[in-house]
Length: 474
Image 1 (cartoon, one colour):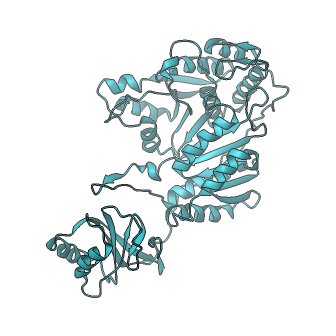
Image 2: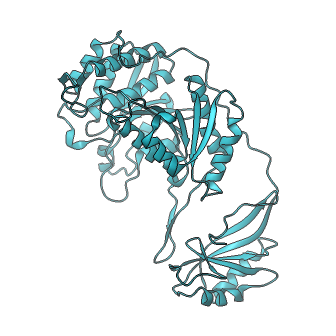
Image 3: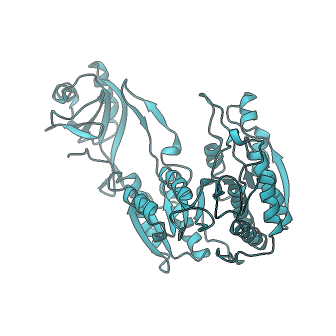
């Protein structure tokens, strides 16, 4: 018996959760349920995080969390509970299977069967943003080696344990050479440990286009956080419906399982919602806790129900569907099919297997780190880079010299183009720095001359290799 935490959520959440639990319990799931309140009601009680402290304690104690969709109230000040949960609990791997159910669910891609494994904790979802000038705001993209190693290894282990043949990495490292470059580098390193599994890398834009056109070309896709968020919703939709997709969020200690769709408050209380997405999340949960036989029984019964044409309104289509049913009736149809298998759709077999090999991250020996310069980011409302260079060059001292000015990453001095549009946010790069101790003096000099320095970034070499971006056009 496994004790799990259940949150029924908002909107259609309670209806689809009741249907999901009814199905898996009828199938023989050995679970004990502890229910908590999260979401809109908690938000509106004055808790801006949408979850009480005692609920966190329950989730952390039980380790397994089955969550229905929630509603975040409109307006500022309310934190995303989904993002918070993933980060607080270290749920680094978001797993989203996307399977075509052709011809019973309408899709242009009848052969589609892919799994998207999305890094869940970092990238732009670190949520570190600042307004720095009147015209420019920034969002920091954080990619770590531990984060890359954990998610990439999870992708290969998932492929190995689920009979998948290929893992594809999507990044944009032709532009973001440091951040996405690290993700790609780690992918190549870990791929060497799995010679039996094919590996490949695509630039995200053309890779996404290929997936939308020919998804059968892919098997398991591993991606950084933001790309994975966008890509997995696209994949679910082109497979047939976002409403049919579930996901798991896996960490070293805890795991959360959910549908990928929202709470659909306009459909709440009408007994029309499709519980399939949350049911798919629950099936992933059953696999995670080792109840493979029950997971297999539920999935095959669900496939049989879809194949029988017993459909909720969102996937119902004349000529294919045989019966339009509500949430409760759909659940009863799945229960009636327990123990049966589909005839046209591919039945599943979930074998008992060894645990996935997911070692804790081991920190590497530190590289030789040397500071070689500093970027001063300056708020300046002028238009001519030459004028700014003349002013900022007065900060040169003790071998430290202005070498370049960029605006939104484009080099505008020296040898800039007059056609380049510039905002009031300028990066002034100083090279020849021998020690970080020179930076305070540089800043003091800037302040004395009325130069508005809004931030600094040190320029380092690691083992003699430049570890910072050049200006575009340099």
